[in-house]
Amino acid sequence: MGRWIAVGKAPGWDDLKRFSTEMKDTSQWRIDPKSTVTSVYALGDGRMIAEYHGPAVTEFEDWLKKKGWSVENVTPIKHIAKTGEIWKVV
Amino acid sequence: MTTAQELRDKKQLYFDDVSVGQQMPPLVIGPLTPTHLFRWSAAIENWHRIHYDQSFAIYHEGLPNILGQGSWKQSILPRYLKDMCLPDGWPWKVSFQHRAMIVPGDTITVWASVTKKYEEEGLGFIDLDVGMRLQYDTETCPGKATIVLPIRGGTAIPYPFVPPKKLVSQ
Image (cartoon, rainbow over all chains, first blue to last red; front, side, top):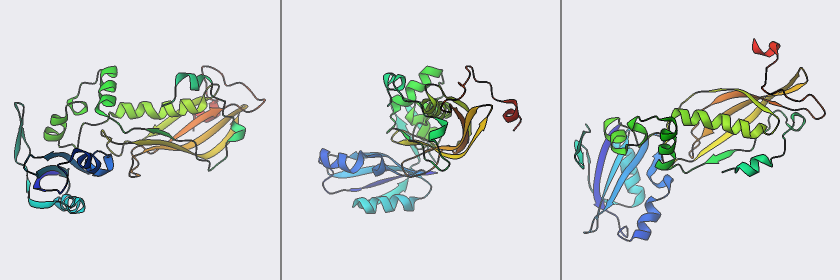
């Protein structure tokens, strides 16, 4: 399994109601038994960041396309710091 | 979720009322939350971090999220069969495989279908195919079970249940 992060813009997702509609239901982020959009961040400047866990980046790209994101880039995650815990991802 | 009172008031399912091919009423649980998983970990003192520490589960173990415990799944199928048999029947045996992960957000449908029914020593035996399906129809726990149901006007099922010798060797 791999992990990728996407940066882009999603029109209207800065509205919390729309954001919730797009992301709250399990079917919106658990694509299939092997593919999960683990986090989505809505940034103050209108951009969005989404983190994906799954077997192939193509599934993530399909999800982004289906959601209507204007994607700047999709790239593998190397390592992560979360409140002092360091995780080497790749 | 079935309440204790509903179980106390439950009408007995009789052997006579079950037919081969019948789909038994399913039990739907979910969407699961981290609280469900943590509660089970606390109850059985299973402190493996994959069950409650999301960062550890995702970034160290390479999992999609924290995982539902296998022992939790092992508790759900017997509970489903027990509720099906109450008040006077008996869930004799169940076996199943763990084939897919369960994570928060998942909704589980516990199901059973009747494959065979037969009488032995005055008791009604029902063989079942059983399982727990996820929301996208992935089967996580395919298995088989046998329950014992009373026959109308027949022998009471002994408590504790002792299976007929003829069936034990099978």
